[in-house]
Image 1 (tube, rainbow, N blue to C red):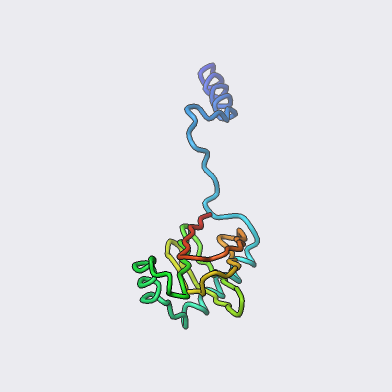
Image 2: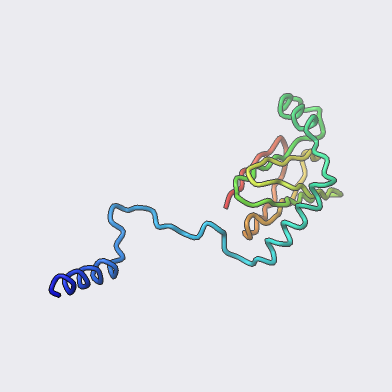
Length: 145
């Protein structure tokens, strides 16, 4: 009987301790928080765009390999999506609007006219990304959650 009481007492003490010895990482929910409706809308938009989207691969590669050509009026924007979610990047500027579907872990890109302001926006795992950049040469960013 004494052994049972001692065992029960030790068990209660050990289970009530919530100490993180050794600074081990605390496990968190692997799924991002946020509004599931926004994530569903982004996923729906991504799935629709991916069906008809035509990437400008050859033009972007040519721009990146010949970036020293100042006579070219266009340059590239590339976005690496290091998050675990698909996203749709909207690039808008003077008489320019393009939506680019970028899968999780993938890179999306487009060609734009140099020496103009462009607004880049999108949702990355329910986190809003918005930025305005003046593009003079090839531009690359990495997004993650």
